[in-house]
Length: 182
Image 1 (cartoon, rainbow, N blue to C red):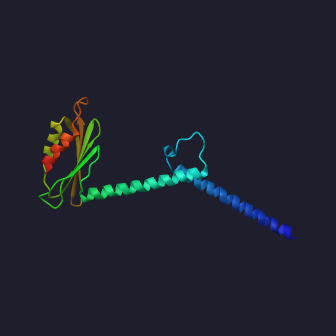
Image 2 (cartoon, rainbow, N blue to C red):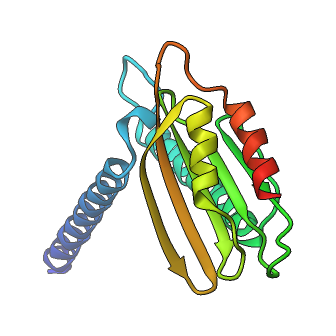
Image 3 (cartoon, rainbow, N blue to C red):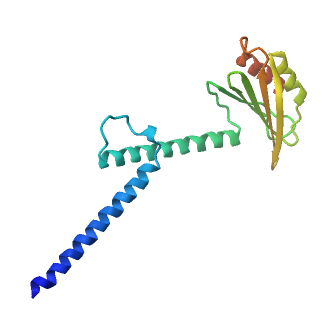
């Protein structure tokens, strides 16, 4: 009689283990489906479960590093630090009208430019002079947007290159804007 009692118990253990494996397999599938397919190393053969989980862990680590990098950039932008990038040029100028200096960022987008200006409410600069600099250097201003957030004013100018074959010399525009806003 003891055999008949232990048999359902073994069956229950097998069923419980089978259900656990199915749940784990489903969770692994959900986890790997959250990772973009291009992140997995290209391979002609299928990756093992361990390799898939390793790739997911690597992806999560890269995301964490990217978040930290973006937090650093944000704190630099909010803290008005100087930073440069190949396609982005950022500068802070001395604000004599208030404690908040004018910060500008120039992005070369190929056939267009984007200029972002951040200033304090009391910092005065003439927007039409910024537009004139862009026009003098061969770009037509297509749109200008502004918004305020607390004591900061954000201006965004989008300019289209007049002659795409000639283009715009971004470094020259940067220097002229730096002279204007200093």
